[in-house]
Length: 477
Ligand code: SAM
Ligand code: SF4
Image (tube, rainbow, N blue to C red; front, side):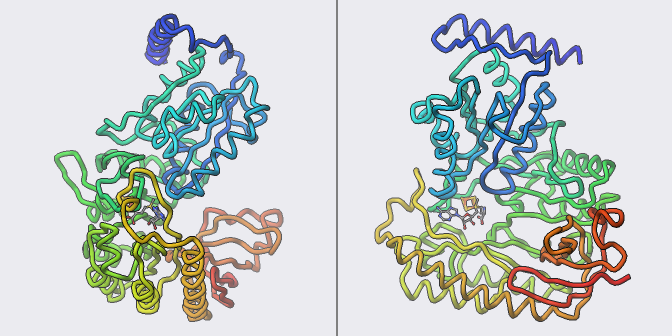
């Protein structure tokens, strides 16, 4: 504690000196942390990586004496943790900021995450009421940046990507009491022609296996039963310690952590997807039988132009490993339609791939032009109307596949981990190892008020109905 205060005092002294040298950025907003007057609010856009980053950011703020509030109107510090994977996601944050252009007086606004990294100091011009712009590679410096804000600096940035370490913090405020995220690798060393991630999240940095396992053991001690390993490409993981473990080795070790009953992971890149991952899943039921393996396109020529580093045949080999596994592995994917130069014949190959693989679910996206990316230079950009048409066809085909696949599960018995209770339908909300939502009624627990909550426990459930996106059933007792 004494050390923390000394550190803070040093930082304050340093920042005060900086502010004295640059009076134009000094603003006399005085907050009084000791009287508990600092409140913060965060809204998160985008992927699970962002959701977990926000948990770490909020944990850091709480450790620095802030109180989290549920509405931006109640907060002194309003943060947006942003996503720039597609143009639409990026625009959302500017709409939010516009809402406060006139009514945000007395508040401090910060833009974090991918839009912050991508747009940098331009955000200060576009939204002059923003005082903090920081990309995810700078979150370790958050306490220092907060001190700068608190001393009145109105132009605080954290935009360096020159960082060879993942962001680790003992302070994480987890949103879910039973399922916890652990980031094992940050950044991306691939260069897909459409994607901003290498520019916004920087190069790959893996955590040591020891630190990942210690976090998992600590979570188990705290009562968490499910862990989801996160990374842009989890399977590119390589332990930087002399152990040098790869992802399959780490996964096996995660499956042995006492008290952890389910381990998931996302996202896997097909190029680095090795059979040992399937072998590990086959050998330990704690490792969930679900793999999200984004294919993007069923056409090898589109994949080559996307710089995805695999052909359709190489991708299908990985699908075959999963289909031949002892456990019934659920497979999901991402599809981009309307990549520049995608012909009708290319698109037909994507549709044929959906029929061949029969995914359990997919995320479909229209190709979106992103700054700095190689695809901007490609010829034959596809019209918005055509992208909309192709996406609708993909989603309709996939819906039919899901109805068929889910209906095959009617009559089977599944283990569901309970996530909550839906008061509107009177059903418990469960999730199977294959990551399917399984809503069910329980004869002895009609609802959380009538009996103890089942959240965080597991139930054996007979599937009685199936829809395109979920299953319904009855608990067996
Ligand atoms: N690293 C993962 C991989 O390589 O499969 C994907 C991570 S990316 C954050 C999530 C998904 O966003 C991608 O799989 C892709 O389908 C989609 N995506 C990324 N950039 C896109 C773009 N410019 N337009 C449309 N979809 C995009
Ligand atoms: Fe983006 Fe490709 Fe990296 Fe995935 S592998 S994050 S799609 S650049």
